[in-house]
Image (tube, rainbow, N blue to C red):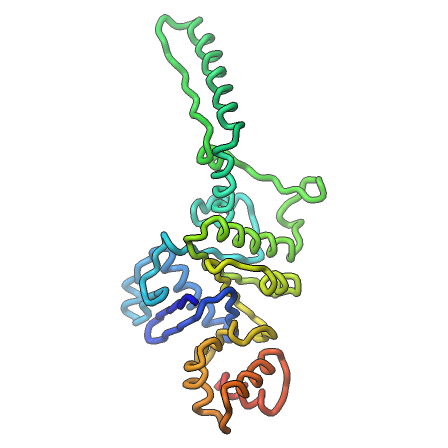
Length: 296
């Protein structure tokens, strides 16, 4: 399991990255946490302003600085615009996806065929130029390759075999398409770890089913912002971010942040049953006690 450490001023967040990690709690703290991760992957240095306010940020993975040759960071949200995605260049998950597809096309038999036709077209252009000139001006067309295709590629959406726009896509189709794209990229680059932030308003049953049931490779980690403060799945997949930051995959963190101050003695297994009930939305005397501790 990989460890993501985020330092913001005097606050520290340690997150155990497995296949899926749900971040629950304070949405205002989400902003600072995610901005710090973006900043690190974009190689943005701390500003004088951040230094002055003692809000310097640092992100480590497995106690080392982020190596963007070994790690890639993508964001998934409910917004999609083809032209905007294309304008992002290497920062776009869609461009990365197309690049991977085109890397296979580079070796397709149609590529040398097209380049041969380009040579024929060069000869035709030259013949017409020779009629007007007493010297040689040799036309040259760039050979087609994956990089050239990507530069000239344009997209049009269609649905049910008719023209469509991004506004015609339903919520589940759009999010599942993006999740599958992340899955594809990780499969194509097994030596690179892919950290994918999922920042969407609702985790539907279809999306949850994908996250629970898809057999992800170990080089793919989803970091999911959950705005409902409920998650009925595995407790180890919960990172709680509020007054305290607690990774429920880390029993030491649970003990230091919760059990040491709990009004009665509990075993770890007993506490986990209460915590699972709490995050599933159950209301009992025990979950009310836990709620008071978490939001204090």
